[in-house]
Length: 635
Image 1 (spheres, rainbow, N blue to C red):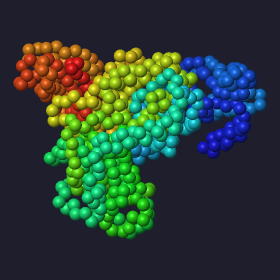
Image 2 (cartoon, rainbow, N blue to C red; image 1 turned 120 degrees about the vertical axis):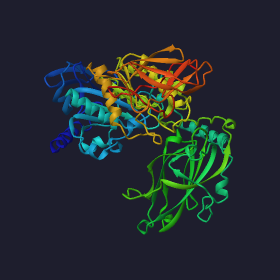
Image 3 (cartoon, helix red, strand yellow; image 1 turned 30 degrees about the horizontal axis):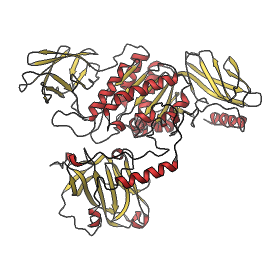
Image 4 (cartoon, rainbow, N blue to C red; image 1 turned 45 degrees about the horizontal axis):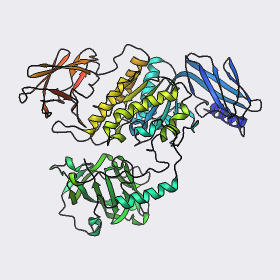
């Protein structure tokens, strides 16, 4: 590493103060696309002559009136290392240790952002992440009103430190391709947790955001929505947050978890208080503490010994999925017993603590042994409302730098890379659009076609279908997660797309499941089979058609992968008659088909499989890949 640091210092010295520059993506340790013409571009003063040398290839250009220049060098086979030199007669820029290989852009929200250091078996995975022919480029978070031509960042070799911060899905995918194909892999990561597809979709030029207008609009929104749902914090007024309050008669719930899943279930929308006591050790006296509670659905106000230490409300986009981290002032950290109280307000659907259990802790920042807060908490309903009487909340205005602004993340984090020829795109997103799943049917294809238009190429686009999440339904249901998964699957109508099914890889109480190895493996199979044309099965069984046979329906599939198999009891299938009322079906594998029937339904008209938020998944092929959720109806 000493020689590499020396060369980078030398590079910085030779280019210091000069107008000649390269974009961040063209730098030492980069991976350039193999087997296609090599585009090198950058900026200088207008009218400057620029010469480019890469190995034994040379090209020259003159900057245009805007200072932009570019040259195209011959295609190069996979390999390296090579050196790139750019000169304008007064400045020399040199990039070392370049490789030619395949460049993949991995983008999306939290599940793509989840780092290797947080994935399953992270300790061993990070320790063994030494692949010098895999190179990593992390795009800094950035939103912009117009498409940007450059970004910050630099390439890094795939070593434990850099790999630990890298997208787990991206790393495992790159590792599998590298080991299978024996070619260098460049991985560009552009991710932002909790962001909708619209923020990543190219849009026509938009007017610049006006901070003053936003401040006025936000103040109006706060006034208009202050009492729309919540009539007021009666529990605080009655002292429910204070240590002296007697909560011995309150029942308990085990957290994290949704109160609808309690035994017996608490099927309400409204405000519920939670309390528990903790004992602080003497060594923490006078130290500022971090109180972490995981994600809370939907809003919360949190107290320590009756003192409000944090709150997350409707002003927070997608508040139901945002992990809470609040600071307890050092003055409150005294040895002995203290009271934690959390008022949770639920607008609709599920309410409570979304987990996981390890996210609920209290202790000094960075301590290796924080107090675990998962477990029994006392609770009391402050008030409950009939969901039918609650109007939909108005959306807050978007701040100028809000990452959910339509087009903003494409402009800031994707547009700078459009001159670079990509091998393909990996996409993992959708949770942030769950409030309007039907809109994803048009929004997601618009994103894909918009990116391809920006690249002026039909770039392969491989994406992850949403995993299972939430409580297991006792009866067949029409669930927004199922609708959004269907919208994702419909994007397969676009050419050169592929979908990795992960409805068996999620966690009921965790939006960011840690098992990313099998997710990446399924994406790698898609890439190997569709992009690299290798003889691998790329998918689990895909529903093809349905035929009626007396009192039964027979389902036909493609992508049999050697044949249909059941992992455990064959479950997750539902049938309905013409009335559209679904009931669970009896299912059996019959050759390359599945036969569905029910003694309660003499004339079945439609079938569904895995059609819920957290479905029972049982049908696979012999390649061990799961069947994608589907339905035969359009109700």
